Length: 239
Image (cartoon, rainbow, N blue to C red):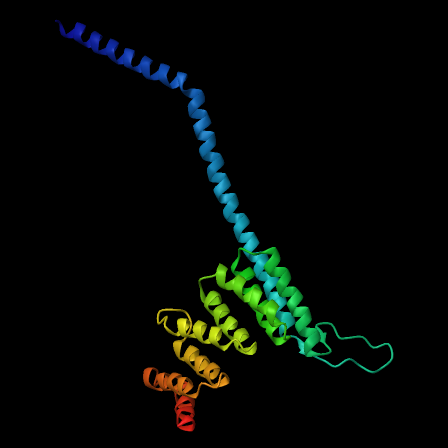
């Protein structure tokens, strides 16, 4: 076969292949367009979701900050002068301040339940309820935090539960909770502090030997702890 004919055949083969590719692209054009649009929509949705999540987190953080400001606001006794009003940002009593902070924390926790700020607000809500002596409500709030968070707030909520148990005279439950927390060396809570609380609960329950053993663990296992010196003193007092 002559070179010119071979060249023409190659050109024809290329043209045929090109036509097939063009036909396939044309036939699948609608499908390709739908796929491209779907990808664009998904990328846009992902970006929008990330923006929305950040906006929610920012809003939750701002509301939580406002609640903390109430918790830390000044106590200014009400004036006895006729017509005088309470200065903005102050409260006449600690109880009034705690009630206001409680409502603020409860609002944040209810509005932003899945955020870090929402969990923190629920934890502070529980603490405030303990301060107000509303132990049953505090137990419920601590449990919600403990069940929802596995971080510092979750562990701290279990410490809070132990405190509630002790205040209610449920010493066995308090001891069990604190003993479990003290066994977690890799947890977020300082074990020496947990052992100190465990010893205090044993004392409240009248369990002197168990209390002395817990204080001794602080001395032996955490000699550099700020609890070590007072724990050593308590061991000596308990004989």
